[in-house]
Image (cartoon, rainbow, N blue to C red; front, side, top):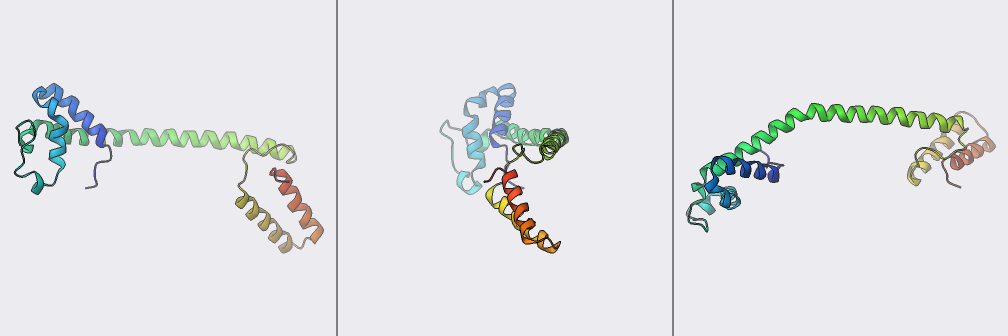
Length: 157
């Protein structure tokens, strides 16, 4: 199993449960969990600074592990909601951006574009426009005019 990605949340969850269920282990919670996470060969004959073996904090370790499982369950339950929110946000963005694109096109490309192209993307567009112009049989003057219009339309002079 992969290392638990919500380590700090699991610790907080386990620490709070430990405070409720085994309050005597709470002051040593982090030391117990740190010792629990060390390889067994390192912790086998080791006693923690407060006189308890790493295995002595059984409740804290169990609650920490339960915390990991509980948080995984919460994230799993939240995924469809988060996915739905992301889908809704993407849909709203597409609709809004589509309206802005339409206004830009209706302005005959004279207003600023709703989204700036990076130089590499603009160059790729201009190269494609040149290629398509040639493929479609346009003459050089028309091709140059198209490239100039696109360059001006995307705010590059």
